[in-house]
Length: 163
Image (cartoon, rainbow, N blue to C red; front, side):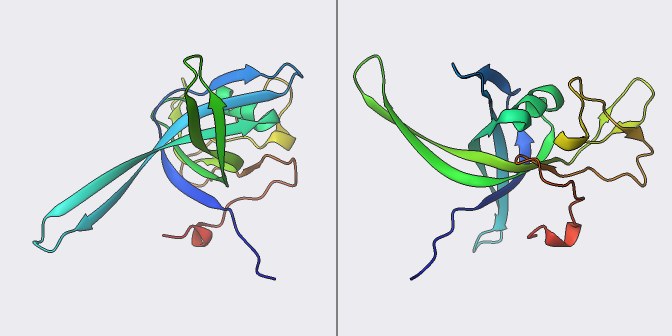
């Protein structure tokens, strides 16, 4: 029997700050947008660019971390799966929305702190209730990979990024 795959990997910039909400059962959910672009040269030699806008959702501890650490404009690696939801609007029209449900995420850029040093992403298992942001030298420190399922923390190997 053939196996199917539902896997999405994007690297892009946040188009809006994450919006953190809680379900009636107390589960955290965060939604935000990520823009990616594709560049190519057409047959006439003219450079072209196409921008795609992606809706992204994170659940649980990862949702709480996204709302604390991500801001509009930050560069982020998102790995997850596609999910399409349908609902009926107040006007009676059926609507659909396709989203990337985040399973892994890495903040790829560094934000400036008051001391002028970069801050790296902190994985969920290293994070107390009020997350500490590890601050260090920009030259050697790499962002850390956050797993939404709470497994062990690993640094992302740059050779694993598909481009």
